[in-house]
Length: 456
Image (cartoon, rainbow, N blue to C red):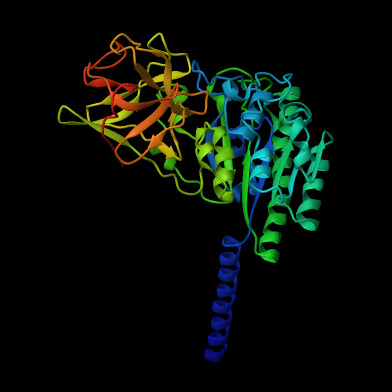
């Protein structure tokens, strides 16, 4: 009897070691991504129902619709929602405001194009029950895909995805499912809507089984992300407005999702019961790019941050009157009058705080109100009035790519009209009127040397 127990114990330990080796092999294997979108699925119903497929994932509440009253606000409808999910930016950048709009702004590419540009040999697939995602917004990206489909039923597109997972060698798959949204529009909340979520969950379970098969058979390392484009109104039939329920979505994953973004995103969070303290649907593209290891410098201009992998931040300081003053952005968008509505004055705050920044290559980026913004010089010389005629206000622009800078650990310069201009702080504290008494406008001076800065 004792011998039998020892043999059983040894077999058990051996089995555990085999399982651990498989998991380790998968974790270090070739990276792949499956992104599943289930249209119009209310987060609260997913949590309330028996959903064993979702239970296999880590699910976090998130939000859609941009920031209400801010430059990023967009309707909680499918067109802007899916475009944001696939580009990582809000409507003010991708340009899709409604379901009937045409091509998205190509200056803010889709995840298809990002991955193709990173490696044209990747095998990309896209199957969308709601056709306009492919036929309107990203029509010009379909040539990058090994196979794609639009329309049909959810089961049709799940079967297409399963066929690829079992019989092909995919690197990235986007799958859009539509049944919960259709059920909501037809019936509102109730048994029909709940049943549609349960059926969607069963489809998700089949997909997760196929991913597990690939990991165990081929040693691949899969990231699975599941999300939705919008919530629903009080009755469950409609959506499109800026209400907590319509803005509430989810991001689910087979891998742990980090919360490093919380140390970076500076956002007033007093509305919708603190929803802006959650990740947004803009976080999906950066998460995919970071997982694949292809998140380049320019991707830090996106409106979201990665939920897997590291996020390295910088802070910039200057010594002003013996005080350590940190580079920040001014909360008053578009002020002084020289700035546009998507721009924030860059300033040095001598109260000891500095905003987190991303210094990437020759650009400096900040995440402001969950929008990617970049350091630039203002075209209007000598404004606001505190500046001389040869000086330009430094600003963070949340719609553009930022000016090229020369950055070292002590100085920042840029060329303006073929002149080398140094990054400085303005001597007049607390001006323009948007700034507090311990704050100085950051500027580029084209007749003076740059002030010394400390980059941490």
